[in-house]
Image (cartoon, rainbow, N blue to C red; front, top):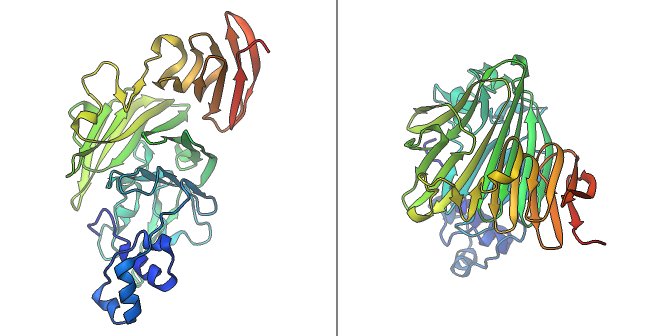
Length: 400
């Protein structure tokens, strides 16, 4: 149970030898375990000398029935990939961990967000199945897994009597981004609603938004697995790896406290916002290669791969509005009005959206799970008014 990643090449090698599928060959090794060797024919052993490889052609995927969503840059060793867990087995959740809306991620050949493994025989088995060792959001002292029942009959696993019920709100994948939105009812017992959005800006990084809504103040938390340093306080956590790969967790909206924890050599950090009824974490998950590509903690305007945080600060209105901008592309979070060089975009309520702007037209993409009404103004004249659908809206800026 000490490993933070598993090598699957052994299984894929057997799959290649059994089925001859080049996609299995892409992940295969030219060796087999000594216990398996004696079961293979001479021809199969010889086939390992010239493995035919073909990377899969599909990219990001949604497994709607099981509730797994995969955000994938590509199939290269250094490509970025994240898995979102948003499913609950209603018939037999015995093997289920308390990681609803939890995430795992890899980048540049490293596991940047691990999901620690468990071992039935260890006394803290139930702790490692629960949400303190998952990349999830929590409230106060609540955890997701409740009413644990161990199994002392020798078959191994115990189970939680209560786990959050998930609801997937949106999944979209295009050339610009992957977008997931979901919620669960795990904190409704204390009067808190929670919604998580995850945005993968293709070939760059992720943005995660945890939205909490309640009638009374609570302490809202994000739990991050990994080995982090905290020189800049709770708003910038940094992990580095043996090959100069780094991973920054940057809180765009200021948080209050952090708490570091660990068990059995595994570590995690909890970032909290205290005494708030409503609050939305907005977190940039930024992997990079090499010291010079890190998020510059001393820079007034934070820039990651050319994307600037709040470079549009003087041109936005909203409820704690945030922008990420690069060239003629802007990702907006809780923005009600955005002023572009010749155009103003105005929503009825603060909205998350992505806009590409050109000389003669705009393309708007929704980052919401429901339609939002907006209008365009040019020189204080209403040029367009309508709903931004959950997919996209193309708007011409010319007179016709």
